[in-house]
Each structure stands twice: as structure tokens, then as C-alpha cells.
Image (cartoon, rainbow, N blue to C red; front, side, top):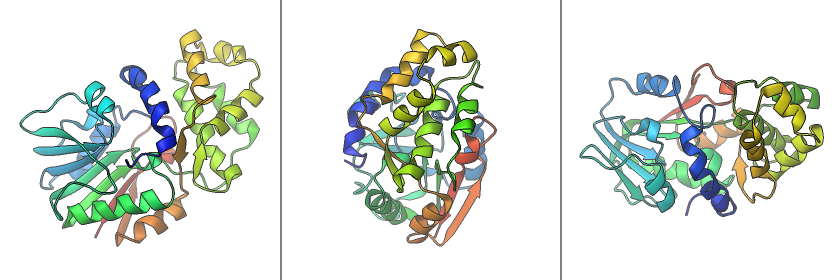
Length: 267
């Protein structure tokens, strides 16, 4: 199974929240439109890492590969004559070499342990994509330097009418600097924002969050999940072991978009 094993209970807990989830975690518009432009004019046999429903209409022939039967059952919009979901391991894909014209994925690399699983998945993507094909991933990257507590607190208090996902994600991204490595436990983020906001009521008042939104902040408290956020240089080094061309394209204008470019990989 390619997802970090410690993260499995965390993802199962998030499945019921998926329908209401928005940017930056779920690729709502304008992200799908940007991806469509990047794929424009290319042959349409696509591989997708994961079962992201917002991309389910891409291409004339789409195969979505996911490790989780629960995700397929609850999130995938269903198979048709043009799309199908397949259970399998991204590190050992059940496909012949050069089977696809392109590979796509949204936030997939965040779910992989660094560096071995990221390396294994990139190697498999290179193997199953045709030599003239590309891989396009929306890839969350850590900032080169940590944010100050003042900066993080200001962000957290500026999210009126926005979801707490933004705050949680930004805090866990920042945790890579304290950890000194790209793969970090999400509990590190909870420890930091609970220190900066010992009373979550301050967040509720500033952002007009209800009890349900505040409860989502506690998802990280006991979670065993670990996420991976390499810096730009680390991502380029990892991708460069398998692909000779690496291009970054902005994925849109939304909270945290500056940390989530589309990374286009070519041979």
C-alpha cells in the first residue's frame, strides 16, 4: 500500500467531510480548468493517482488508481465506458510499460513517505507513461523558510467565511522546518496552533466559525497521520532522478496556491 501507513485512520475519518471540502485541499475551480489547459491537445489515455472526483471527466479514457476501497466506494463518481477506478499500489502499478499518454494527480505526493515512496512512485509513473508523455501533479511544497508565529497567527485570524482546512494545512506545512525533514506528523501542527490559540473561541469569533468547524481543528490532535512537503529544491532533486524536464505552473488564485503549483514532468 503506497500511502503512509500511519495516515490510514486519518483518511478514513476525513471521508465523510469530503463533500463539503474546498480549496486548497480539494481541487475546486479554477484548478480543474488550469489542468485542462495543461493537457490540451494531448492524447487522452490518462492515469490518475487517486480517485479525485473533480478530475473524473478528464480525457477519453481515464484510469484512476487508488489504494483504498473506502475512497473508491465513497468518493469516486462511478465507472463508465470512459473511466474506471482500479485498486492498487502506486509503487507497483498493475499496468504495462508505456500504457498511458499522461499521468495526473492532485496532492498525491503529500501522502507518500519521503524519500523512498516518493522515489518509487515517480519511477513507476515514468515507466507507465509513454516517452513523449507527461505527468502533471498539483504538488504542495514547503516554503524555503519557516513562518513566524506572528505570521501564522495573522493567517489564522483572517479566514472569515473560509474553512479551517486552510489554517490546519498551513501549520502542518510549516512543521517541516522544525522537524528538519519533509515528512512530518500532523500532530505537530496541532501542538503549534493550540499553543498560539489556547482558546479556540478567539478563532471562532474572528472567522465566524461554528462548533463543527472548530471541531475539525481537533482532527490533528490524536491523528497518527504523516504528510510530506519537500521544498522546491528537494522536489526538483527527487523528480530529476526520473524526468529530464521539470516545469512549474501556478494552479490558480486561492488560499495557499503559492505553495501548490502544478509540476509538469517530462522525459
